[in-house]
Length: 237
Image (cartoon, rainbow, N blue to C red):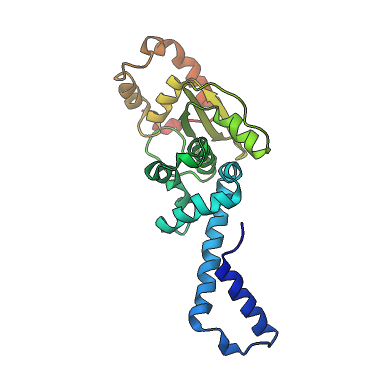
């Protein structure tokens, strides 16, 4: 990412002042403030790149800066002391601005990047699903795609189909990912908002799901939740 031309010009003038090639009063007060503004914006864009590493590499840092990071920052500046929170609105913003033309995988890659970010910096939630557990639905093999992008490898060939991924942390705080059945994922999404019983009530109202198999798969799912620390047992009922 190249610095803005205005910042380069200011730095050249500032350097001349330091070398006493220009008098100190040649830098106007407005210019002195603008350099802090430019520096602040640059740091926020760098934070976006750091928090969304696959999305940044997917597009290339220059294109990501000019087409995504800087326009988003202009419309959605941080309103919280925690720098991670202002990134969370990026996926809805991309959908609203209809920027899928920039790259067909941009939105799904941003979504999986954000899932890893939110698993590391979780928000409190009301449901019985632990706050670090992030559930992402997609028609793309997001984990494989993200790994390939981060390794700077060619993205794998794939067919579009319903998929669901869970990003979560273990006892040591290390992040892991797992692909699960979309039916299972739908239940987890309800559990993020509700108690287990309430989530089941919502689930059985969806006629598109294979509800006949629910009773047979629940024991295995429950064992998985306990083993992988996905649920808050205090909020189960």
